[in-house]
Image (cartoon, rainbow, N blue to C red; front, side, top):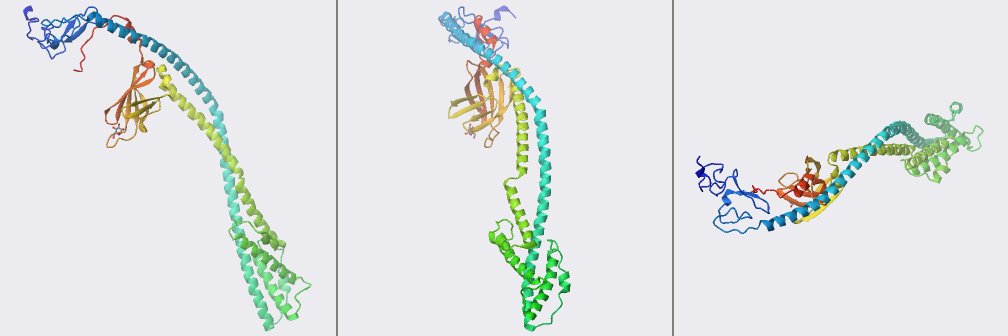
Length: 452
Ligand code: MAN
């Protein structure tokens, strides 16, 4: 191409390279107009801005037809002051970051030591747990057996009570029979057989024993009715009858008081009438009930269970602490300066909502969950997700971008799409040495912003 086509105010090349000094090739960003801006920051601008009658460069070099005053010295001074202030803040922030980084590293060492300690304590806690668990299982098995035995005993007692009741009824029937016999003056039978049939009175033989005895008593009563002598008989059967009657009276009271459920206390009257072997039988049943009531109050198994629970809690606590500390260690791996945010909640009201971000746990918009800490997504970005379900939308989530700042603070929160939030969080941890170095050097050349 002939050199005459350069800056002839006619665009010959698509990349605008033939018109760097005119606006003829506007609309492309491959070739930009450069203003030196002596005393200020040099700048590249779109060629469409050249000779558009608007002063863009502080030295006025982009306009040939209008006179632009040179403002570079003032602009340069303002920029240098802004950079100086930023560098000052950054120097302080970097000191804070370095301190935080050291503290984070120290915390990490401490956490690793804690993990080691916890892990060394775990085997003993586990052993105690296992022993307590075995003791509990053994005691429970023992109790199960005892309960079973007690149940059987209770069933036996119940059966005996029922038998006694039946006996009472039979007794009444016998009395009636006796009366009838008396009335009809039936022939007297011998008593020998029934006398022989009275064995030692044991609980188990009580029913049949009673039946046998009752037969004899019946006979005896008929006989006595005949002879007119009820008292003072030498063979003692009459005393047996009255003894039974006394016992029965007591037993009746006892049963009435017990209500047959074995739960209520037995009244004194229930015990008064008890006498002899039958009495002992009832007493032992009452005693066993009382015993089981006591057992309810202070079951030794409770203590064994408590011991196990305590051992389990201690073991689980150890394991949970280890897990939590390991999480912390992982979280700040390579990001030690961010340890200052650990367990810290930053809060800021933006628009109608107060946002709360708790590191590294969860984020909230008022009481609405924006999510739980999920992970780092980059060197200075992170994600909270799984928050409250958005009506007709996704679960809420929050993306955090960390920015260099002198303090830990929420700078901004917005909602780029419904229920997907983005926060900018300032922290010294995000400050870089590179930025400070840049600020301490010469003013950089400005480039156009491409968001146009
Ligand atoms: C609430 C807030 C808003 C969100 C809507 C979605 O009003 O959480 O941020 O956009 O719910 O319904």
